[in-house]
Image (tube, rainbow, N blue to C red; front, top):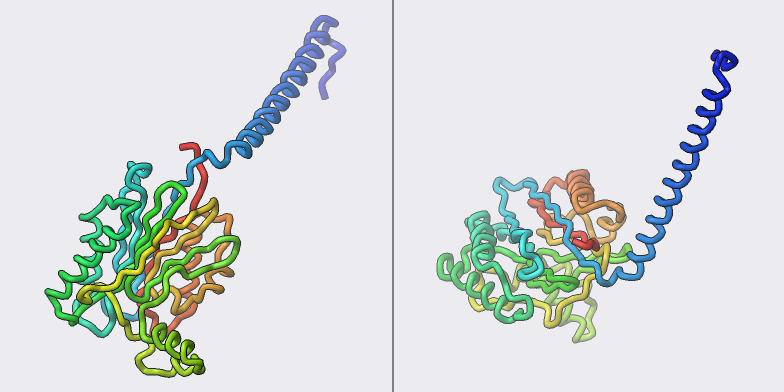
Length: 298
């Protein structure tokens, strides 16, 4: 206990004045902070469309039950984004053929050598991929090949390119959409059965169902691509992955497995652990690049 009776009247008044001054100063500080937060919120809402969309990027690169890691990833440099944009690609060496890991790495190395790409010239970019495919054909004559999925993001827009059965997934508003269709026999057979009015379930029973009808390493391959760029919005999640991911985690399971307030690194870890937890005895290699779109003044 303190005995304030021994203090002089002037000292007590000084203490009271100091406490009052501190209280007013603290209250003034709180008012300034609240005012700044309100002004920032109003300014952000008013100028939200003027803020830049930026790419928050993470990836995982895991070997499944295969002897070799036949997936290969490419992420373009993050500098000079407003001129060159951002490119992410995944190439998966075809199982059952020779040198899958060599071919997939050749694909991503070739993409790296050809960077930067012209965002508004999708046809020219597809020709670059075709030339890469033709060189692989000249070397292996269909004895080796790989799949390819690639996205090119500039400002608020995205183009994509695809060969084979790897995945480009867009998650928006808790809904996942596969942007590219798989270039395999099952896709071809379903289309033909549907056109003929037949039961498409028969296509899934065909032994050739998962066989690819186009891939990197095919002569004069048919590159799937966007004719017009896709508009992106804040909090969009883009997943560029090998089919080893979706073989164990279908789209709805991926959506249910992630938290949408996470950054790209957190989402990538959740998907990776989700695939691993399935403990698939025939698990293929599984790799993915995760991109989350965020707004920033930078």
